[in-house]
Length: 88
Length: 85
Image 1 (cartoon, chains in turn orange, brown):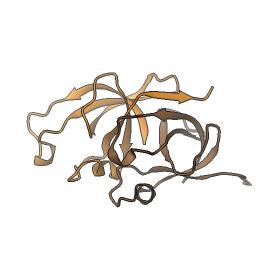
Image 2 (cartoon, chains in turn purple, blue):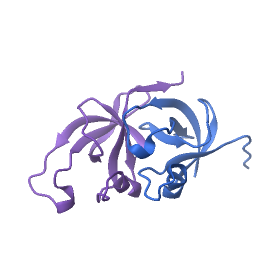
Image 3 (tube, chains in turn green, cyan):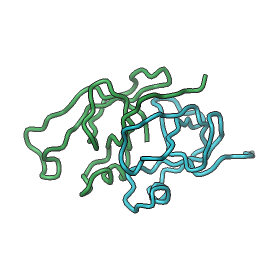
Image 4 (cartoon, chains in turn orange, blue):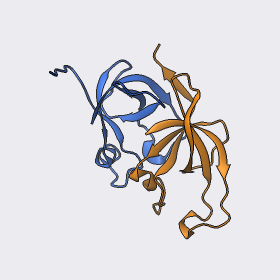
């Protein structure tokens, strides 16, 4: 599970049935300075987020369990972060 | 499982129902760089604690009481002592 920032949204013109109506966000990891790092990727989300939101993302098989019925995804936003308190 | 140091805490009000009431900590594995990793705290670890972090869906299920847990990163223990050759 990791922290990331929402940097955009993806809209699909055609998709498999399970993805119909699903919001998909573009996210990017953040580092200890809370700055963007690494490559952007696409994530499903349990609730719609806004661009710039810091989010909790599960990147694993369990990501599909954020949805009922389970969504065939390996990346899901499962929380919106208000604040990150880092030591030092 | 990885040995990590707790380097922070995440404050999150709006989150998946199965994350409600769970404490989420920022953890850093020894020698790992890159983006911030987080784990659900199953043991009341504090910032600075040396902890054991598992990536097991079963650990998520254990904490939530639900078989279909939406997360698998869990702090399962606080380390008192480490020895290695």
